[in-house]
Structures are given as C-alpha cells and as structure tokens.
Length: 356
Image (cartoon, rainbow, N blue to C red; front, side, top):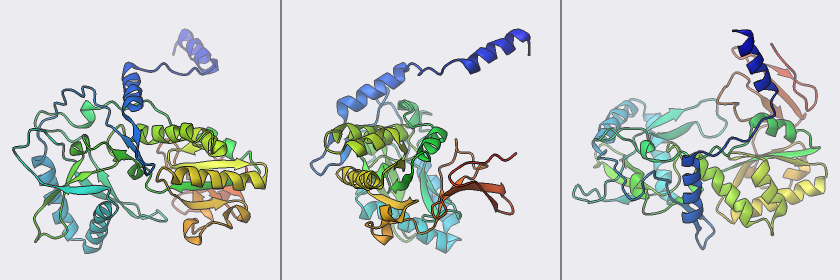
C-alpha cells in the first residue's frame, strides 16, 4: 500500500462518522410505508410490500418450482418422523394463530401469485424453539425473477449492537425481554398476501393445499425494515401516553430484543409496565424476561421469564465466534474462551474482558 493510500485511510478512520444519505430506493420505500400503513381497530398494524413498480408487478408463474421442492423436502422429512412432527406443528400453528389462511388454487386466475418454498432449520443450541420454518423469497419464477427482485429492501434501521450493549450496562438496573414472534404480529395488506403463498399438507395421503401467509414473513428482504419501522411507528403513536416506552422503542431495541435500564428501581418498574402496555396495544407480547434485580421480575408471570440465568446476547453481525452471554444472577458478561471445550471466561462484574 502506497503512502498516499495509507494517509487516505488514516483520515477516513479519524473522520467523524456521518449519517449516509438515503438512496432513491430507501426514499420510495419510506414513502410507501407512510402512505399505506394503517392500524386496525384492535391495534394491529397493517403494512404493504414495497414493490418497485406497484402498478406492474411482473413476477411470472412460480407454483411448479416450490411444489417440486416441497415434495423433495417432504420425502426427506418422512425419514425423520420426530422432525416432521415438529415441522407440521410449526406450520399448523400459523393456521391456528390466523397467521395464514387456506386459499383455492385457480390456474386461470388473472393475478399471478408468488409461491414461497420453505424448509426446516434446526438449531439444537436454542433454549426455546429448536426448529424454525424458513421461507425463500429469492426463488426465481418462470421469467427468472423472484419476489425479492421486485421489492425495495428498505433502509437499515436497527441500532449498532455494540453501542447498545455498552450503553445498557451503564445503568444500575437493567432488564431484557424478547418480542414474541414479532414479525408475525404485523399484518400484510390483503392485496399483497397472494405474493406470500405456500404449499403444505400434514399427511402424504392428503392433497397438497395452497395457503397465504397473512403477516410479515422472514425471508422476504423488506421484512426487517417493515418490522423495525413498525416499532418506530408505535413509538410515535405512544409518545404522549407512554414516554418511557416510546424512548425504549426508538433507542434501546435490537430488532425484537429489549436492552434497557435505569438508575432508579422505581423508574425501571415504570418502564417495564409502560413498555408492556404499549406493545400489547399493537398485539406484541414480551417474553423471556430477565434482569439483574429480582424485583423487576417479581410481578411478571413465571412463564414469561427466561428459564435460565444465562442470556445469550444477539450475535454481532451474525458472527458466533464472540459467544457473549450475560449471567443475570451474578451480573457479569462472559464468553467462550474455547468454543470446543465450552469453558467460559467471566468478566469483572458488569465489564468486558478482552481475549486474544
């Protein structure tokens, strides 16, 4: 590297960070959100998918490809009955919670729906849900386009995780909670649910049926934007009635994880109650609560608390090597020195240690 290049890099590193300018795509995505988002009488938000050309959604036919993939996945699942049972349970839950509905397949339908292939992903290290259903909106159709190809992705709205965690531990009293099935509490406008179709059957003796997912679906590239943007919309809507909750939703969330705290125990309890109330008004439920003070958790149902003292903090840029965890009982961070042997290295109380 030449001296000129080194000098340029030096000044780039030393330069005060500036907020990047919004791209034309991000501006259109935000305009679409503000123009089309509404709230149902029950408080739930309804959003639309931010299509690049909403008047001419040229996506092609797609049912045949997900059908072939579904049959292959089904054949594989049949060799693992316990996994298939969990998978069927996960899909059926969508129906039971009204997160999807059955529709009739009509080859002559003038509108061209989009079918999402789906498969199971198993994460045995998770404390709660071991199996998740993953939907693929990047699957190409007959005209070689996918749903993700014709959508805006939206601006990045999530906060920097490192800054959030450092800020979190500056407080004397802290708590953490998780919004249960956050994406699935946000409804998609019925005019766009045909672009979220899936195929499913519980038994190979049954016919394969068509369903439409009714909520924001992970796997569609604009889903993170729609979910976080809706929390910010809720923050605006509850600013006057729930000021503490409004601040948390704007500044102390990492996607669906709450990382907040205060210096006064009474304020922490008030923030807990405000946040619970504000989120419940929009159909969001907080679960897996944990705190460094038992009084903050005392009024919460036992089933809503994290059933372990160890909190797995969100991964840094999807990198698992740090493995940072927080022990609420002794109020300490630690991470795995040797991931193979799984030997933890504790910090001093509330502080990080470096490991090379």
